[in-house]
Length: 518
Image 1: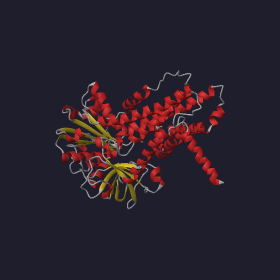
Image 2: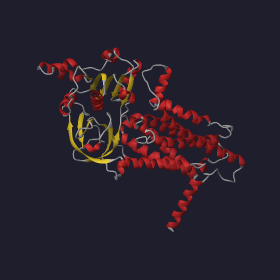
Image 3: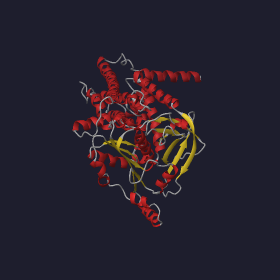
Image 4: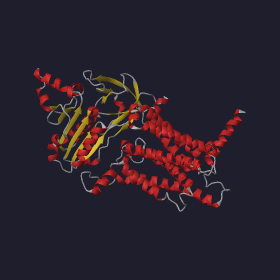
């Protein structure tokens, strides 16, 4: 008896998936049949645009990029080259929306247009899954890193969900305003109910995605993001009419499999050799040096490379459900261990505990910066961003011919400087020469004056700045000598990167940044 019920459920689900896949019910009148096909062909159009967009991305990185050129034309091209999400959303949606209108009247065929935007949202999931691969499989050999796509992935995801919710609410409005149909009966229909169920969870995801909520409980957001995306991908084929199983669900399913296989293939298990914490710091998130087994990173890797770490094994469900943690490698490939300079948060590592490394990923460093000779490079770091800054600094100091190379480090606690000098070492950095330090917390002034009264670290007092950086005043010497090979590389919190980016833009300086935001 139970087997018969199970068979009936399977047959019913198969019926939901196959309904209208090939153009609709033959009993429908001819006009309905044409409208039905109109939306099917529109889905193919959106899929073709998605494919052409991936080809466009391939071509973009083949073109030269000179961000320092200040013409309007060059400014737009630079935004395209740098994957500015707003510009790229326009590139995607202008052709997608060109064929959105049809010869059918909007008000008389409201349902047709509501179905059309719903189909658009689901077809675009394929593109979103393609650009969110780590690394972007189709593009990574052509100058892209997966973290460059993160802003675009975020905004495309939001846009897809908003379009899908508009589709859902449009039908709720249509049913409630049509006296010829029963609103309750429409909502009770199993296929319609599945759509309402999906829209409800989309609303939940939007609520937990707002900045304050996301930052307060990132794990809740991440888990919700994972599960609700799966609800959308697997639930929509049971809801959609015309059907979206062929080819869209299968394409999305294939990409999900690629995501999963990639998460297994690139992973490896390593142990933490040592952890050294700055116990003198007055801040709760003080700097910590973590050293891992050398196998945590490839034999050779470019400067600024980061690894992602999970505390769970590959066969633990939490490995798939919870986020991993990105940390920049600050040691050189020839070192015996992989060293990280981190600012400890809720995730705290322990010695001799096994962790899963989810692969290593290069930084966003343009070829023009590496290949040119005579660059003028200014590296601006905030807090634990010194790990990224040190790896980039050491690379350019020993592997390229630069005319100017300097690090500016902004930190809250003076003890972090001494901690890094003692436990990590800064052999090629000299305060006041190629290293400038700004202590942004006012309570460090007394400590600095006290050390000077005892006859210690007079050089430190004259070269350290116990204040925030004044971009126009403190970078005057750099601006005076700038040319088209001047670069500013910034790593740190978003506020610092925004300030540095504004300053670089105002002064026509090539700019790249590295940060991890939630």
